[in-house]
Length: 230
Image (cartoon, rainbow, N blue to C red):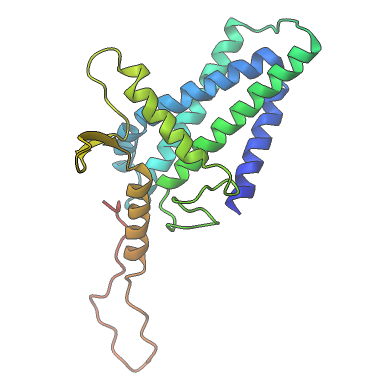
């Protein structure tokens, strides 16, 4: 099921972006990449602020909400800004026009699909749902857009964005394993998978209802809250 949802996201975004012409499609692809990287960088502080504003029952949604809201807001703001600066579309030959606009459209759709799939990791849903599994290549077992996006984010934070000062690697814990020395180990998928397991266990730990109408119901029986999972 998740595979079909991902294809629908890819196709829908690509179809909409392709209508912007080759310049608009390429601009949108770049905007999607930059917006995704910025959202990955700032979603944690935003989630921390949201967790104090949301009702306790919805605190676990703070990460997913922050990721999706930041991405949507950044894409919209940048797209509007580009239209103000460069409202026109340059002319070009038809083969280049068609190839460029569909390349930009498909890249925009794939990045958006990968980002939304990454956001699924942070949602307080069952560990495996709708066919989604953190260990699985969730696009028909052919590709893993979420892990590709996480790898790209980590690579950018570790390499190209580390030229000034000490690098602040995204999801990059350093540890020594055997004789390999210090290496960077990513843990984003497994940490959030464990979080979803903990949430599911917490929600399923509520006592079963008493079926005997003559039995006394304990006065201190309460359903445990979900919590953050950490």
